[in-house]
View 1 (tube, one colour):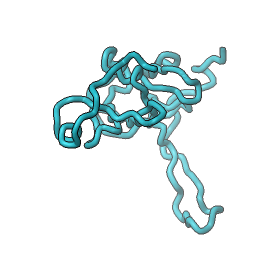
View 2 (view 1 turned 60 degrees about the vertical axis):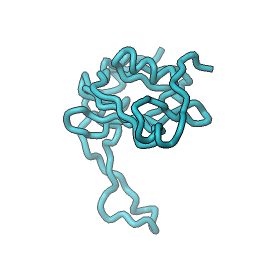
View 3 (view 1 turned 120 degrees about the vertical axis):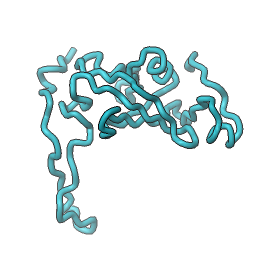
Length: 153
């Protein structure tokens, strides 16, 4: 159980039109978070936050997420140096999604070495009825080589 307490959710009107942050965490204790570049609005990544990650993000000004695969708090850039400095934190209309607008320090957000985690796109000629045509093509250059940045412990 987290010791980070956010205001209790109240009425629909207050949640949707009020001035108090009332985030809706899912049954797993997580809230989705979209992160975009504060200057270009390019979507950089998607991750989850728990209450501790959201509180740390607000307190530190550094994007902090909950790693489901590692089951631990993850401060973006703590290992790679590619930090995300929060310029704005927004919520959607019913406060069940967070949008961070960040300064992408280091130029890469993806652990695979790309500026954005969305570095591949569906290639032309794709047909949902023919799985063999569902090919991806690279849409961005790699910024860094993960093998040289992430050292296995």
